Image (cartoon, rainbow, N blue to C red):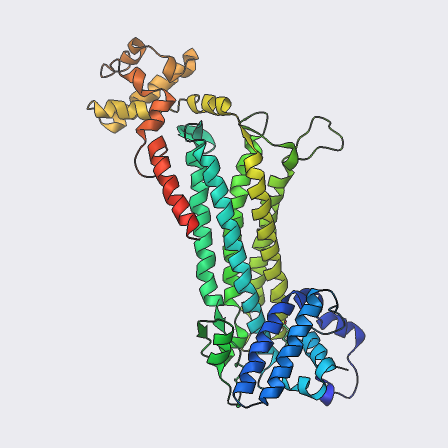
Length: 457
Ligand code: ARG
């Protein structure tokens, strides 16, 4: 029999019953549901809404239920949702007293509380995993401050840089991701219990006490808002989406760096898979899966936005659908962060191939133009002269480093012998020492800042 069956004459249709149940999804809220109920019962006892002895009995039984579930002694099953399951288990154990727990509370504010408690923890765990990934990236970057590689625009070689400079770019992105999660946590961390079904309650409850017991710095200020918004869940899914976008881009690069055409890296056996038909294959499946899973997280974000857009105030059963999207974001992001953090140190970088790539493709052209500018030529003219120089290189099959001073001078008499010291890639990189640039000293300084910011997460 349903707990709410008083006003009903006949039972719920079997299919309808199965359809409206959320237990298979929301059972993972059991710990947070129990935490919330213990705080609620404690407050009810302190405020004299139930007897202090009743509150004590309820809290003790709830704590037993928690350990029984945790240790596999009590199996979560046969209830509409996790809130009903816990309450039924409590009533089984305490009889009449158990039925008093739900005084001054609705499942609407209860579920709002549970999901906020749950997400608060989930966000902290995600930030911790971002932290480990950033540390790993910094460690690898520190070994590659002189591993030269091309920087690209339009997927065409643009200018030389280093692997350290490239990897620390991702660290910056990940630190912003962590910041976004921490920011979204502030708005998750608001206590909604006491909103009741929609217009709060007439019992003399103490909402601030519940907040204090559960370590919430704030309580919601409008009961309709408290039970009906899930904007914090949308923010969470958005933060997850951006994080996945960054992971996806980095993994996309690993995928093509590992191609025969690029040859920048070799994947380790531990993080690649073979083909069922082609014996020679070593496929970047993990990287592709991270890229692919980005799509499902974006899907979760759009699902949540769409779920909420037409809902009138206050609670509507549609909102039960929020949990699948939230949990899927959490699971996907955690899994991807973990696999990727373990995979990164297993990559072998081929510094020689990367450096060759950095030198090819006339990546010194910008610096040749800048050289002429420093000797007094307006930049636009310098751009044209070096364009002609590159054309000459293409025709004669030479690189800019291979040209003689005489060849340079045939394009402009501003070129002197020091041009030969300007064009080698190590010089090009060393010259880019402005904040944000790839010069060894600059990247080393940046790494220090990154490590400090990572440690503070
Ligand atoms: N299982 C429901 C959910 O997740 C709990 C709230 C149900 N409230 C209600 N009035 N039906 O949203």
